[in-house]
Image (cartoon, rainbow, N blue to C red; front, side, top):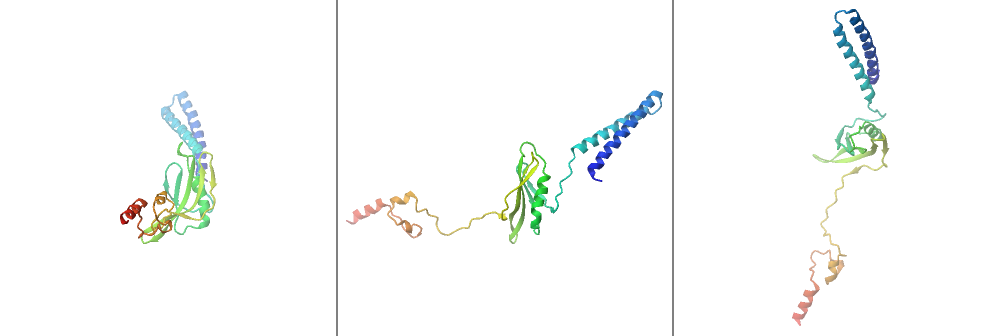
Length: 209
């Protein structure tokens, strides 16, 4: 028997018990028997238990279990539009989609700030000793308000992009500043090239004459 069914049955039994105690309490008052005030307390307490069990059974939602899903703990939740789960190193590829569906299906609304949530699964791949990089295995969109989950297009695993450094100077030869210089634009990337403005060149020619 499931937990929700147990709570529903408990609410029913407490209701009937409270009703029976209420009838017995009335009889005790009619015949003025002893212990009637104790029965009043027991009756009220039993009825409160039945109401509590009924309210819990109405509000309780069992967690969603998707076939094929694996355990992936949530390591980040900004409370708004992003939830990230951590996969193990040997996480099977066929379990990515059902695990995303299970995590997204168990999300609860977080107020007005949470409507559409990106749910991601990532794993850490070692790069060097003591250094690892996060790789995104999959992602879905969860509409918390509508209660629907939309898969995103299938992509290759993504990793953080780190641009390669180059020793060559980054010179834009199309820059307008070179228009006033008497140099060949094709040689602008040469570090040893001395750039002389045209005004200084004209002055040197006048001095030589």
